[in-house]
Length: 88
Image (cartoon, rainbow, N blue to C red; front, side):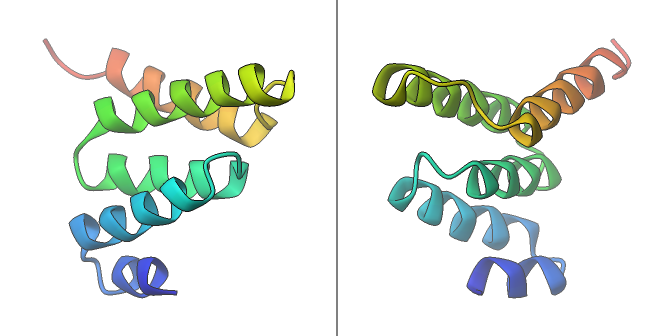
């Protein structure tokens, strides 16, 4: 609720902080991973967002023998594409 309120208030850094806190508590939750990656990207930290996506996928493979949700994969792909479209 705190993260969502911060996002509604356009406080991107605070929203990212709260989503990261939730992601630490629920590291295998795909919905939380996506929201955290989106919040980090909105706060200007695309590298941290991509790192979270990679660590989330690694955790799922190592602990559960499974792949991340399609939403997580799509979010990572969007973030990577955004990086490619940035001017040099």
